[in-house]
Length: 230
Image (cartoon, rainbow, N blue to C red; front, side):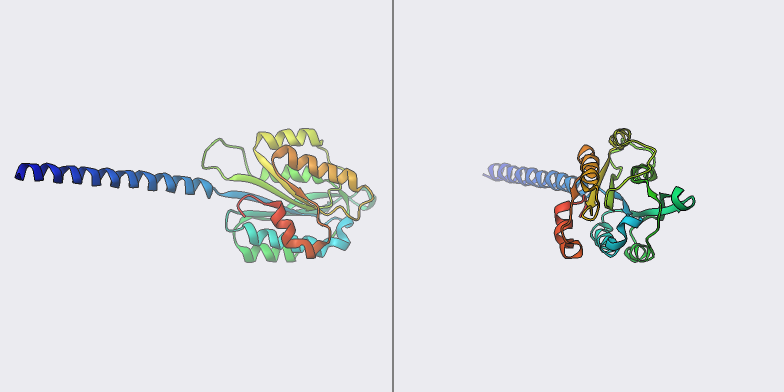
């Protein structure tokens, strides 16, 4: 009788141990999956401050701040805009990094507040290339942050040295996705600019949204854009 009870107790303990081990394995797998789901993202945010954006620049800034508020906790954000090089009609608007990768929301907003409109022939494709290169060399490490470029622009490009096809190949090779808020409403060549943004985003696995009414559309636009990490 005593032997029988001892065997039953051992069986119970064995079953309990099995259940505990199963729970530990499941919890470990859940933790791994959760960590993968929360993989960090590195963002490069471009705010178009060229002359063609003058009448929409307040909306550009509003979208920029909304994007940084939405994603800064998920990963560092760098801010880019145009600076002018050259003189008069020969001046070119080329990309410059105003703030290097940070998750400091206050620093991000202050940087955006200090941006202003300037002239020059736009080089949007060159700007995208510069932002992609700012992430550093590509790596196959599983822990490497996802690379995301966010453009807030009318999509106009006049003087870029790199061609769209070559740029897209570079972006694919470095696994860099491009997302865009396309503010093309006031362009005479809106269809050309729209096609450029559609091509850049689609080919790299990103997305483009074309707002209809600027600031009033802000939250809807961000929801539709569905940035990684938001």
